[in-house]
Image (cartoon, rainbow, N blue to C red):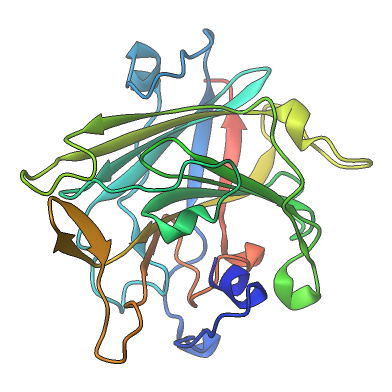
Length: 263
């Protein structure tokens, strides 16, 4: 995500040398097959009981950094047509402003999915969504450090997504509880020449999730991102499922593993 900022001409600092990264190997998760299509409405219906929660997200750099201020976790299921994702985000101050498809969604609080079906660090997909349900999606031919440009013109046209808010959006007169994100990512949208796009039992893909969280100040009855003494907004927090060891989501070899299971 921060390398995406660099592509927009913004300055990036704060990288942690990989030799200092002492966390365990990328995390793993078994994705169980559901026998009934899931209704995507931002609610946790009965079908989700079959899926275990991931661990709570950590700082992108790993366990040596402070525990995130707010809890985040996710679940996954699959069937013949979709990879289903449910995320639960604790949030006392629900805030979102962006409404246009393919806006730079991480300028709001957001939830992000990074998906590499071929597990080869090439030709992967990114989805971002905010509390308004606005989506940004892009395709990467290869990571930025390998010279891969982002393809913002790619859209996952068959994506189904929804959010459910437990609180009041953009209203600081109360304390909110959080929001749920639900997605159905269609395999058909992942099709590329010569590439894997549809899972089979036992297949292993790479995936990671990121949550971007800004430090906010009150602004009338709403919120605004906090500005530091240098006149610039404070850097965002990045909380992830499987820690990257550095502030960069576009290093697919550090993403977690998912294995598709029938039972």
